Image (cartoon, rainbow, N blue to C red):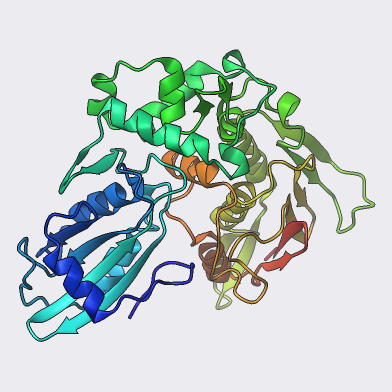
Length: 402
């Protein structure tokens, strides 16, 4: 049995499975005999997560079942379970959904049950398309259906990045930034057939609240013309020290602010200028150039600090470069299901809209692997492991030079 959610799993019984197999007209059950059509699985999971009928109940994808509810004799392998479970975090399903996997072995074959819970932040998209269930069929959502989904989300927004920035208005967003983002977030066919207003386009991607006529905090972080005016902590304090102590006079310092993509790119430019290249000897004969830090490891941990920070805090992200180490610190400690005991193997997203945007913009490849990837890159370069320390109101990562 394999569960791909950090939530407490819901245990299905064999009797419950038989009921799901028999109920061939339910809009909360889909059956498939395929074991390799990952896109079909992703579309079905997306549709259940959107919960267009607003049932508030989970939907079920039954892999190994025919349309009439009988089994097709499928053998559920570990590879199939990994492939289906990976849909949750591979970045094609945005925002991430809560789901469980459970394998049943019956006399006439195996069934892999994918239990999908309604998203708290619809509309959910799979590969930039919004899928819904209308009765027993699955289809891409039309404009009215998408509008119903984002109105449902507005009514129960919980995360800070989904809530409105009540001091800001539509004119405080830079439309060219959003238009560029939209071409990456929504498939071309949907854009071509779109007749929605600018406000509705923003709202469908969680950047505007049409009922309050206000941008969300995520909208201000990603597309704000003057983000710090509304969110004072939305910048990075960047300092470079000549030695190893905070008491040294910095040789470079900046408060890097602006829209999130610009902040990331400016920090990357500064970082490249301060990552030293050193000569090493291989077996005493060959000389090699090696970076004092692998750039992508630092980048992964920096992006992680932005993705999980508390944007409500007035404190900035800190990026300090010393002669022997780099220190990254972000406001906001561990969140949700993440604890000192299970971190970083378990994580919850304080900012689901920001996390989704970083994936769409190409800054992250998939979810939940940033820290592990950074540690692997450090080891391959010969650096010691990064020290990552959760505090009550912050998270600090220290990388040591080669």
